[in-house]
Length: 386
Ligand SMILES: Cc1cc2nc3c(=O)[nH]c(=O)nc-3n(C[C@H](O)[C@H](O)[C@H](O)COP(=O)(O)OP(=O)(O)OC[C@H]3O[C@@H](n4cnc5c(N)ncnc54)[C@H](O)[C@@H]3O)c2cc1C
Image (cartoon, rainbow, N blue to C red):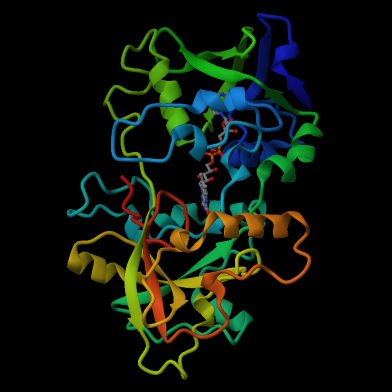
């Protein structure tokens, strides 16, 4: 069921069993799981069903740290959230990412990697990925022409990535959410404050505002913050009427540990016997390839070198060519052409990018990368977390 919060009388009370704040990748995934239950789910989305400039503008913010993308451009503020322009690169974290490492300040999670397995498996179909298989050998079994490079496992291994279509949650799941009688999707419902109980031990209600000046209250037995990383922290910090430092911020860590995946040109890999080497497993054709391998350092090598986790994607190159990162290879024109091809039903030959040249590389560009919690390929990913 869909209700535009602007059409409600000012001062309305929205009540449910579960209240999910934000209808992006996380919020929609969670709401989908409740469809058909007897619980009433409130799904509060600040934006509309489509992009609107005035709502997007609420994401504007000042960056006082290292240079970064404009905050109002990097994330999307409408139904479907940032999946409206994500790229669909998916992989899993590794066990070492959860360990305390004395060379990584603040490292060590209270859970182990294995705890995520059942959830990763459930996320695969939501993201329209293949089977929950991330071992290079499984992909080789499916397609014997995919052969991992013969790496010394004590030093390096082939880590697999899968590629979502990429799923645009706002279009893919709109009918399911809007058609679910027990999920009450409120659009244009910006949550601007969490109101705690007297003892600051639980949330008593939410202050919800529309851009045309209406203010409503939402109440539920349970609340889920699914507004995206920065917005979740912002909302907790802005909820400071009773907790001056912000809700849940007794230790001054809310909003700290902001993570981004670094992506940089890494260097050149020169194959001793390029005619014999099969690099198909490492190739990507955007919109076509379902899975590919990247090179990753073993946990033992990371411990020995006291470095962070990362993967290296490979792209074919010529001996005199400058190494480029994945994103440096994707010019805006190329991205636009691929988008058009996908939007028109992938009819006709796929768009060729420098990353999917059919020739096998004699020299390979290694693009080194470092991720935030779940994600992306082709760059040096720092899984360290915190
Ligand atoms: C260009 C780009 C490419 C990316 N590519 C990849 C990739 O290849 N692989 C990968 O794993 N990740 C990728 N990401 C990251 C990925 O898109 C995000 O990690 C993911 O969308 C986060 O999901 P989320 O539900 O936390 O937030 P979002 O998807 O952003 O959803 C948050 C939702 O909350 C709503 N909201 C915000 N504030 C409020 C409020 N106060 N009240 C009510 N609603 C609110 C928003 O409107 C939005 O709908 C990419 C990101 C970008 C920008």
